[in-house]
Length: 221
Image (cartoon, rainbow, N blue to C red):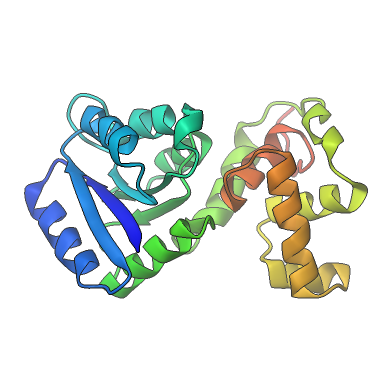
């Protein structure tokens, strides 16, 4: 079973999401939280597979709660899926930076929400259509200069190449086609790079690709 915690300050939203998820044979909502502080406490108490986290909540907001959960080594297996009515780039950018594995707006179709929970529970990244490209563009425009790529020293040359392609927004199949290897081989390289760089998921590889200077389109002077 995929164990889920719902964090949203609106009771109606929690009830709706809870009913939808509990109706699935492989998903169980084990706790709810009405603000960021309760979300952090629930993560520590229940260690869920997935936490659905609203951004705007009273007191401690969802971004800070995500930051605290992601920074706790004991909660490394808790995958956070951000759910919000706001699909603004600044929220996407910050949510991924602080450790979210997925980002969906609340008007997402029910079937897509359920799929997102399953994808994130497996350790993969899930972003709304178009969000990955915008995220990449945000890194390109915000970056002033490329830092030394010292964090990438643990990677092989091929793994560096693969991380760069992930940073460009390519899927495993697209990476395989570009490098003329099988999709399985591409996936293996991505997985190994994630392990070596301690990246929670593919989205954080994008962050690392830009912050390390490995990918540098449009750097501001």
